[in-house]
Structures are given as C-alpha cells and as structure tokens.
Length: 341
Ligand code: A2P
Image (cartoon, rainbow, N blue to C red; front, side):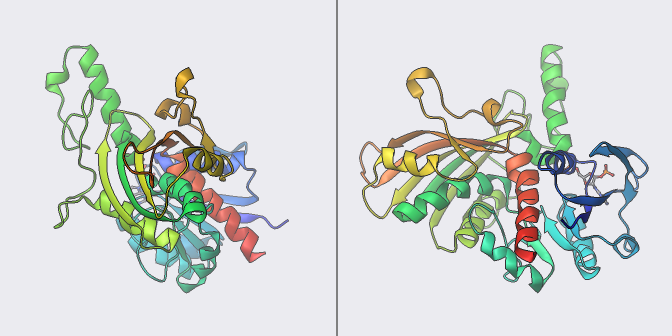
C-alpha cells in the first residue's frame, strides 16, 4: 500500500496536535511527517507513530523543499489564504480547517459521512475545505434524516466550547476558574472572548454581520446548504459556554410530512459516526463530557413537537477538536486516498 508524506500547518495548536493523535489511531499510511508552525515554535518537537519530529517554520518555500502529498491546515484563515495555494501548487492536496475557502464555489466542502463524492472536485484548486465545527455534527444528523424524511427547515441553538477559539480559548477558561477559586475573578481581563467566560454564557461567536446574525451563525446556514446540496432553511443562535472541548446543539427540525420519533431514532441508529443515547428515564442523553475525546456525534432527547406533527426536537454533542476538526480532516484524507486509488 502506498504511504504518504503529510504536512500539518499549525502543528502545535489544539487541532494540529489532535490531527497527529487521530492519524496514529487510524494507522494512517504515513511515510514522512512535516510539522509546521510559526518561528515561535520552530525547533520544538512532536511525537507521532513512536517517532520524534522537529517543528519547522512555515515559509514561502517549505512546500517546494519537501514532497508533500497531503497538507492539513489549521493555523487560521490568513495563513491558509497565503500558504494553502502554495502547498497546492507544489502538488499536495490541501485539507483546510479554516473558513477561508469554504464557500468558494470551486472548493469542495466535505463531511465524509454526507457528501464524500464532492471530494473529486479537489482537482479544481487542490484544496478541500473542512466545515465549521458546529456544522459538521449537525449535518451528520441532518443528512440521514433528510434522506429518509425530507427536511424543510432547521432551527438550532449551540452551546460551543472554548476550544473553538484554540488553545488560548481553553486556557482563558481555566485561568478564570482558577481566579474564581482564588477569589480573584474580579481581576480577570478577557482577552480571547468578549466577556468573562467562566460562570457565564456569551451569545456572540465571530463578528456580527449586517443582518444581525454572527458570522458563525451564517456559517451554519450556508455550509449546511452547500454540504447537503439543498436550500434547507436554517436559523442559528451560536453561544459560547464555559466548557473545554465539546460543542452541544439543541436542534428543531421541520419535515415536509408528519414524523415518527421512533422511526427517526432508528434512522439515526444506522447513521455513520452517530451514536444514539436516548434513555431519559435512566438519565442517559448526550452531554459534552460524554463526547469529549471521542470521534462520534452523540444524539438524544429525540421527541416530537407538542403542537406540530411534522416537527422533531433533539440534542447532540460532539468533541469540537476531533469531530469538529481533526477527525473530519483525517476522514477526508482517507476518503481522498480511496477515491484517488
Ligand atoms: P505557534 O505555536 O508557532 O504559534 P490554536 O488554534 O490552538 O491557537 O493554534 C494555532 C496554530 O497555528 C499553532 O500551531 C500556531 O503555531 C500556528 N500559527 C499561528 N501563527 C502562525 C504563523 N504565522 N505561521 C505558522 N503557523 C502559525
């Protein structure tokens, strides 16, 4: 079997580190690994597949100096904007975790459980985009339900972990919790988030747009439609919560016809990468702690609306760094290999 040279841009970040873990777990066919980051962490070391690799500075020429087959990007939109085309030009397929290329019409936006066939479009630009973390877990649930029952509209409220803002976001929560227990929370100065995140909720992720929604909320609308190839109406409210690394979502789904909760549950039991945990009488339902450090999207609290027989409510949780980023990126790479072989 062919083995691949892999680069990870943002190798020292929360998502980059997890990409190495997932590559190891799935026993990805690796030949060489090139961890890339800024000059700040060049020379530091990462461990993968029992070997130690030195982090190399990301430069304009680094992709010409190494023969990279697959380049994962998770260092922010401006880095992808500049360096992903350079990686693609050198012959690598880029799997980009940022929002920069997601809505570009010639760039496929892929959740392998939903639209694996779109990967073939990678040849247009050499780039495949990894969707927004909240979108990924939602479409893993919507896709099988839409195939079976025809979805018309979705209303979603998210409960998003601090990991969505990278390592610094997680550190800000931990620091503020420590300040709380030291009775020093009044000294806290939010840096990553707009307000104190410990013991708080912030209904504001990314910037506000002219339509009064945030960019994060509009990502859930536009990306869902692009991935599912259907103009489903989506309305989102995205909220940052004091959780470390799993996003949760309360989703209301409007179907074309009456819906049976048991049938929907059965469809989800057979959906790839989805685990139904729905025994409320035993206190069993999805929670961020249940999904943390796993590769599955957990769904439960599946119930019909009190007033409309075509409306279903459910709750889901998935690890933001894995399902929402690293795992999806590695699954795209696996599918890309399968399709290219
Ligand atoms: P570095 O450690 O050198 O700062 P997170 O999303 O967890 O905050 O991680 C961001 C990742 O992006 C880190 O690996 C960080 O590397 C990397 N990064 C940030 N700025 C640059 C840059 N200018 N060039 C390359 N990598 C960068």
